[in-house]
Image (cartoon, rainbow, N blue to C red; front, side, top):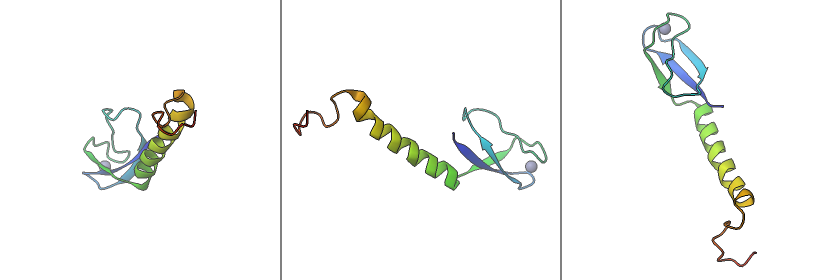
Amino acid sequence: MPIYEYLCDQCETRFEKIVINKQQEIACPKCASKKASIQLSVFATANGGGNGASAKSSAPSGGGGSCCGGGCGCH
Ligand SMILES: [Zn+2]
């Protein structure tokens, strides 16, 4: 689950939110301002990389025979 870090433009409070839909409105927990800018945190980076890697590695086993395009003769 992606966790994003936000920095409130109004009171400069940092807070984290689990974002399911990137279009969803986020409000600062302190001043309730909806003007918060997203911070590229370690969470977001690690999560994106992990998602990509797991999606890639799960594709061959679930893909059924398209692991290498048939060029390696492994099947
Ligand atoms: Zn705020």
